[in-house]
Amino acid sequence: MEQYLYQYLYIIVALALILGILVGYFIKQLVANREIQKTRNEAQKLLDAARTEHNELLRAAREEAIKVSNAAEAESKERRLEIQRIEKRVHQREEALERKLEAVERRERDLDSLKEDVKRTRAELQAIREKQLEKLESISGTSSEEAKELLLQMLKEEVEEEASRQVRIWEAKIKEEAGERAQNILATAIQRCATDVVSETTISAIPLPSDEMKGRLIGREGRNIRALEQATGVDLIIDDTPETVTISSFDPVRREQARLALNKLILDGRIHPARIKEIVDKTKAEVEATIRSEGERAAYEAGVPGLHPELIKLLGQLKFRSSYGQNVLLHSLEVSHLAGMLASEIGANVGIAKKAGLLHDIGKAVDHQMEGPHALIGAELVKQWDSNPEVVQAIAEHHGEATTSSIMGFIVSAADAISGARPGARRESLEQYLKRIKDLEDIAANFPGVEKSFAIQAGREVRVMVKPDKVDDLTAVRLARDVANKIEESLTYPGQIKVTVIRETIATEYAK
Image (cartoon, rainbow, N blue to C red; front, top):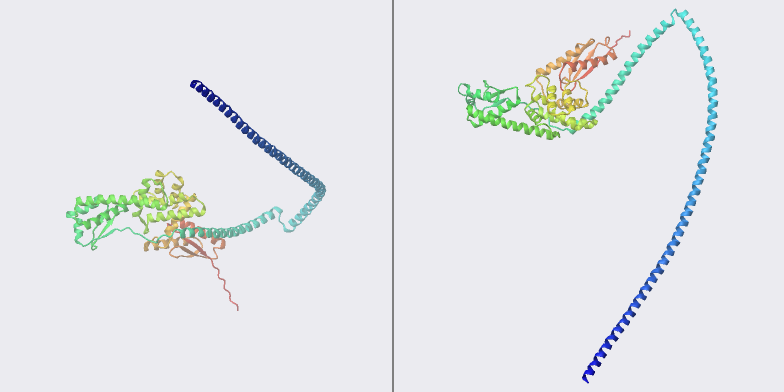
């Protein structure tokens, strides 16, 4: 019985499982059908929306096409009207040209008739002229060729006189304009270069603490002074001047080395040949270092980088060189600044002008060792270590030893004159000053027609009084130019010299 009961239970469980599976299947199918229906509904909605949007796009496109078509028709209509207007203007111009052509043809016919009339009139005038010439020749007793030559001679004299007058007027005008322009450029450059007015001299006298130091410097049988002169290459002058020793040498660097070494020996007190050699060697090394540093400083201040070390060395040596009491290194630095400013004012290369100005007097560092003007010496030195031909040419031309033809030569020459001619920059001895004044007056007095000549303004102007019966106004202009040229050829001077020729005629009469 129990066995049958378990069988029934198994059958019931199996049927329940089967029924559950069938129910789950049907439920799953039902849910799937609902999802499918839902998806179909959403797809239908999307399809309806797409159809609606498509219809709206089609409607908008049709409206846009209608607008574009209307605009194109309007533009086409406007262009047709414009073409019609252009055709109308062209037609009017053609009619105007036709009228002008007709007028030109009428004028040509009138001109032809006038030409014929002119030919007839010329022939009549020629016949009348020949008759009048015959009458004039018979009355004056002079042929037409002679009269022509006389007339040409008179015209030539008048033309020469008028030409001289015009040349004088143009020359005065050009000088005035050039002078104003040059004054503006130079004034601008001088204002921008505000340097101290200082005159330096090379110290050659060494003060001693006592006259007893002179004997120590001389040494036993003069061994100390000989050792010092041999080590430094200078001459020591120990005379009766109390408590002073004078150093003499054409080489400013050696003179500076001797000065420093002598001061150190005097302070140290130990003066004997071995100590002298030791001090002089140290002093030479110090001076060499000073030369390099001064050359580099000058190149840096001038804004001229990349100089060859030899040029730097020569440039530094100029610190111990002076010209008319003016330190040559400071002068070169000032000329570099001025040359750069002048170049910028006239549109030239500022870098080349600065380099040429800085190196323009570099020949003075070795002019005591080489023959020739320092400008040409400096040009040869720079040519060895600088490949820029403009710089070399400007250095050679700045004092007139070479023919000045480059713009850089004129710039450096002008900057050099400004630096040397400013008040207090240089000085000269009384004898040299008086000699220069006398030479100026003698040069002007040697020209024919000169009555007296006076050098004024410290030799910066020459007044020339001429005889009015021998020198007229035009000759006075030529005389001033000739005197200036003669001064340029004969004398050396800083700055420029003004030449003024004065001609005065005094007429006196008495009423009785």
